[in-house]
Picture (cartoon, rainbow, N blue to C red):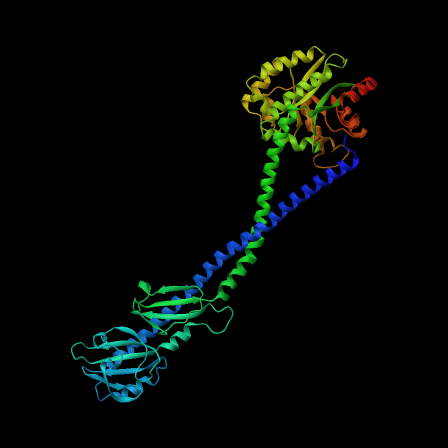
Length: 519
């Protein structure tokens, strides 16, 4: 036999194992929402950063489109100038700050510049001659006026006269305007404009961040070969990341807790349903009995059988917890059958007066069983042998259908007494009472509690009692707790009384002593 110290050590080890299991479980419950928030925030930040950079690219393409439309106006003006009008070009371009200038050319050379005046430069100074076509756009690394500084040029040419103009836009100015000022967070770090394989700037310098591409495409009227490369700044990504994380974490945590509670509740209910099934098999349920006394002589004429459950781990479980689960899990019928057999075994040990009645709470689901009549015929005969008459108390949690009423009527023909339990609080209707014959009507405690109170509902009790008398039902008052209530009910000819004023629900041995003392 193990000594005391070994038992204590074993208990401590079990406690440590349980604590470690619970700790791991709670750490998992706490860390999983954080991990999910981190992961989802990453994808959301990537999506938002891409969208923001794309918006910037499209906005800048719209600006480029507007600038190139101005190039068209300048080109049309320059095309109408003669070789003697170079001075007019200079004056015209003086108020065009976005543009570096205009070069006029003929079939041999560039002969006029809006910035330097008359000049004589070969046509291939900017581009090969065959690329100086009407409407063509190009990025060039430099222009004659500013060597080494890239620019965007648009060519306008009269193919018949071979006269034309090249409008030069300040490329670096455009790129600098694409990047937002030093505000936090800056959306893009580097912007590169591409056209016909040439880029602006000519040698892009990326920092290793993610780069996205925005094409002009059919959405813009600018040359469809224009493309913008945008390097997304890390600051923009982390800006969106922490916003998403701050919003997602409480949301995910709340959803996780709610789903865990629902799952726990569902599993708990399924687990309790399994426990009910095993509890029936292991005879964990027992009965207590509450006497029902006659209002004429105060003696007990019967009892109501109430089921209790001694759970092996949870202890005594309240009926309002396990009865609804038994009904949902379709275990109420086998549980009720167990109650019948247990009551039959209990009262076979007692010596009772003739016509002693035992009331059983029976859910309407019981009356759709195919063998209901044979089962109650057996119960009638078995209880009759020990001097007991069974009384079926139909609970009102479910509406009685026509088929159920026909089954109940057949049971009354077998000599089974029928009562409506907790009348006035459930699904029973007055129209049903007119077509459905009963023996007893049990008045719910909530109406008994109105005795002595001047309330709106206090007159409902008198109406129910009057209904019982007119329809020849035996009236039973439940939940009688004070002598004032008892006197009031007796004065109005309520036949039977039940409640703590007379006795609480008792186990069989206590009931036997109570019956000997009071009867």
